[in-house]
Length: 285
Ligand SMILES: [Zn+2]
Image (tube, rainbow, N blue to C red; front, side):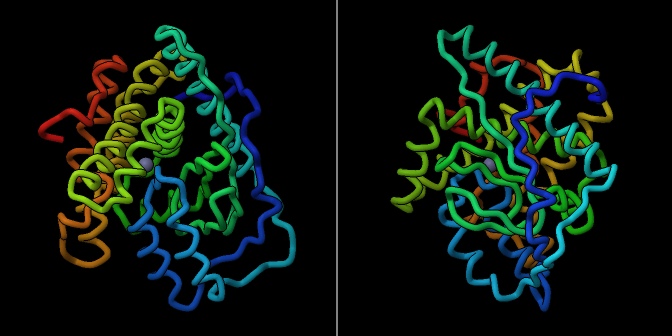
């Protein structure tokens, strides 16, 4: 992917230098991972996530001094902006083609800890989309965890994939899908759980769909797609469970298996057709 010098809309709210820089310590590593397991790529709202996280607030160390962004941090911030801007252009076009108007989101970059309209969250929670303020929240340290703990391939395009996945939830929010699925999930039925996974897989499909439309402009190559697939695979429920608890419990799946996540991303990437992403009516997800 070549993002340097490409268009930025400025819809990134950079709070990295403002954050407390609180890091989970004293066994928090494992707790962080467990939280991550429960909320990874939370499309949801963060609403269930916040109370869980707050319990662990006492395990953090607040660093008083402000953080100074390194050159690498600044570069990554620009890349995030370029990718977000491109998702805006792609989705604006798709919405227009369907007689709809796309409302842009804001992406908040933070370090350590953040307060959203959905409550407080820490980097261990993974990136999430909050319906309370329609914003995407990301701590880029998350990607190190993805590589070191969950075996994802290293590469900037992993970040692009996750941005596109979260923006996929923003799209679902505008289409009324998030609300319906969250209501179903609250009933705690098998069907509700299935619909929730379908929603997550659709966000992966949307990420692939975005990559299809961004391919030429951002010069996305085969290696980038491999990196995205590796990231998608690393956050499959089965992979996370194997690596954190040592066994796989299908009943507790929330986001789909590694195979499903890769398959839906690829379907979006290959078809580029928004209508091919109806994960909900599929008998076989
Ligand atoms: Zn998600």
